[in-house]
Length: 376
Ligand SMILES: Nc1ncnc2c1ncn2[C@@H]1O[C@H](COP(=O)(O)OP(=O)(O)OP(=O)(O)O)[C@@H](O)[C@H]1O
Ligand SMILES: [Mg+2]
Image (cartoon, rainbow, N blue to C red; front, side):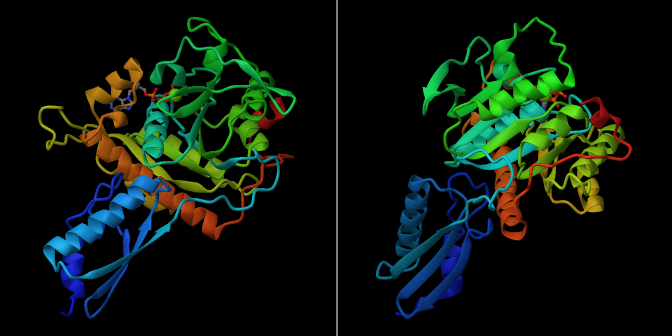
C-alpha cells in the first residue's frame, strides 16, 4: 500500500483543533506531511500548551486517516508547541510572568475593557495561565465584567512578605483599583498616586506563574501610560479602535506612543471593535454602520499586524454588564471571533519574542512635546 500525501491532507481538512476556528490545514497547524509507503508522519504546530488538546489532535488525526484513507496506515504525529516564551527580560521583571500585553486605545469607550476580558477568557480556554490588571484607575471596569465587584483581595504572607492575593474569576486572576474603592465613589488620583497604586498591584501581589498578564489601560496617551511603561517591561501592545475616523486618528496616536524611540514597546497589532452590526437573528447580515475596514487600512498604513474584527452584538454588551464575558459562550459566533483574534495575538507574541530582544522598562529623561512627563 502506498499512501498519498494529497489525500491525507484532504482528510486532515475535516479536523478542527479545539480553540482554532479553521480546520487544521487551513489554520496552518499542519506544518508538514511526509509519506513513505504505508507510513505517514504528520508534523503539527499548536499554540496551546493544554495536554488534552494535544492528545485530542493526535487521536483525531489517527482516527481520521484510519477511517478515511486506510485502516493499516502507520501514523506518527509530531507535535511542536509554539507558545510565547518570553525573551529574556531586563529591568524590573516580575518573576513568573512570561508576557505582559497592554490593551490600549487612543479614544475612550471603543471597547478596550470588553476586548481585554474576552481575550483573557479565550487565552484561558486555550490552556494558558492568565492574569488581568485593570490599570484604568479612573474608570475600572474589570470587577463588573467578571462579576466580582463586591470582592476584596486579602493579604497573604509569601516568603515572609505580605502580598495581595488577586481575585479569581473564570480561571483569570485579577486586580483592580475598583476592589479598593466604593463603586459610586469618584476617585480623583493624581498621576503619582495612581502610579503608586498600580505599582503595588503589580509588585506587591502574588500573581504566581502566568503565561499572559493583560493590562486594561485607561483611554488616551497620558501620564498613567508613561508610568506603567516605566515600571513594567511590556512585551507588546494591542491597540483597539472602532472604524470611525475620529477613533482611528486617536488609535494612530496610541500606536505612535508605543513606537516612539524612547518607549519602544512593540505593537502586536490593531483590533477593530464594533466593526459591523449583526442582528442576533440574522447572523449573516453585516451592516458597516461606521464605515468598512478603517482599522485594517490603518494597520496597513502603520505597518503593524491587523488582528481581527469584533462585530457589534447586543450579547457582548449584555455579557459585559452581566459579568460573564461573551466569549465564554461555547459554540457561539462570538466565541469563534475571539478565538481567531486571540490566536493572532498569540502568534504575534511568538513572532515578537523570536525576533526582538525583551522590552526594557523605559527610563524617561526628556520627551519632547509630552507635557505629561513633566507633571510626574
Ligand atoms: N463589540 C461590541 N458589541 C456591543 N457592545 C460593545 C462591544 N464592545 C464594547 N461594547 C460596549 O460598549 C461599552 C464600552 O465598552 P468598554 O467599556 O469595553 O470600552 P473601553 O474602551 O474600555 O472604555 P473606557 O475608555 O471608558 O475604558 C460597554 O457598554 C460595552 O459593553
Ligand atoms: Mg475600559
